[in-house]
Amino acid sequence: MFHATDVILKKRAGQELTDEEIITFIQKFTSGHIPDYQVAALAMAIYFQGMTRRETVVLTQAMAESGQMLDLSDITDYAVDKHSSGGVGDKTTLVVLPLVAACGVPVAKMSGRGLGFSGGTLDKLEAIRGYRVALSEAEFRQQAREIGIVLCGQTGELAPADGKLYALRDVTGTIESIPLIAASIMSKKLAAGARGIVLDVKYGSGAFMKTLEEARELAQVMVKIGVDAGRDMIALLSNMNQPLGRMVGNALEVREAVETLGGAGTQDLRQHCIETAAYMLSLAGRGQRWTDHAENCALIEARLADGSGLAAFRRLVQAQGGDVAMIDDVNLLPRAAQQVEVLAQAEGYASFVDAVMVAKAALVLGAGREKKGDAIDPAVGVEVAVKVGDTVRVGQPLAVIHANNSALIDEAKALIQQAVTVRSEPVEPMALFAGVIDGRTL
Ligand code: URA
Image (cartoon, rainbow, N blue to C red; front, side, top):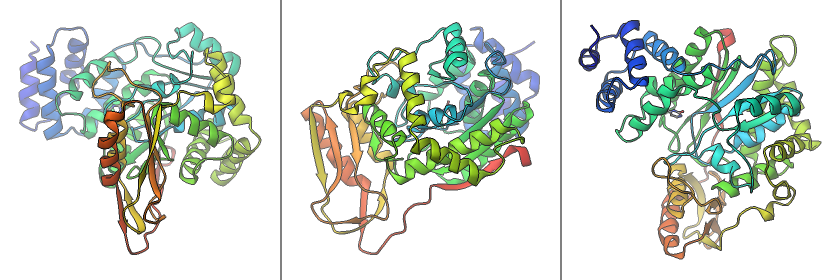
């Protein structure tokens, strides 16, 4: 006879759970036969005691199989996908997907919304007037077949166990657990049907994993889960100590993505997108083509230079009902009533631009949500004007605050002042990546 309490006590005591215990727990939780408080208790036990790789793989499979498992073989015989573990100013999906599509590889991706300090692709896309993130499965498949690019919210019920568990973890202090994050991300990826998956696993102040070591462990676990499930996996370890690019906020990030696709944009965002897209090509080539990383990067750069990446983004927006005039002229995107500069008070070199502080400033202004379902303001956010290593002079703008409510500006300003540390000695720019784990060569 199965008792949820036995499973909780066993994990609390640091013992390894059997496959059957994990699978039954997830099945009964999904069908509503285990109350939330017992699931929250198990999450806390896992948070403190961890899980072995075997337990994590079983948990992920059970969560993936808690709902529909998509089969994308009518769209392409080898679908590729990407996923970021969550960051600040991470608009890479908006740039990477069109670039990969412009190389003739169909991309059909389901994204999520932002929560807490981490932004969400769906919220960014909704800054474009009319853009429909909710597609039926039939629409999703048709668009992928017809124009080779689709970017929307979940269609059917993919990994419903994760949806329920994530909501509980969010309010019980159990998000930052390697097995729980790995199972959460990978259950959705496995259910979404891609054969090749590039993971962008972030570390640093603006990531769930604060250290490179933790991020490496998370990446290794996720790659292993994917490989065990028969998927080709690549994980990039990327630095999330300072915001990626310069914009944090929904319409601001769409603007930056369009500018990047148009050949402009900051070097860090551009390079991050080129690398990610190149690895997606490498997976899509399946060892037959696109086998050289440097050549793949050059091909992606050519798609930036010839405008075909931007054209693919325009096609995507049009197909999903968005107002393409906002892509043709980014000044038409929602714009906040006030733009207020935050000025440097010290002279020297920027030694830290704390991603989480910038995210908090954007959150205060209304760009994100504290809890699921909160409304967001697409126009507000922060435009960061300095990168680690830049010289800073007294009185120069460190950032521009985009606000719709004057009462919130002082708090946001204080957070930005706290975010930027200036030193008198020169500082090296921050490295973008700290390594790559290629599951095909493990
Ligand atoms: N993203 C997810 O989808 N799940 C987590 O647990 C953390 C980040």
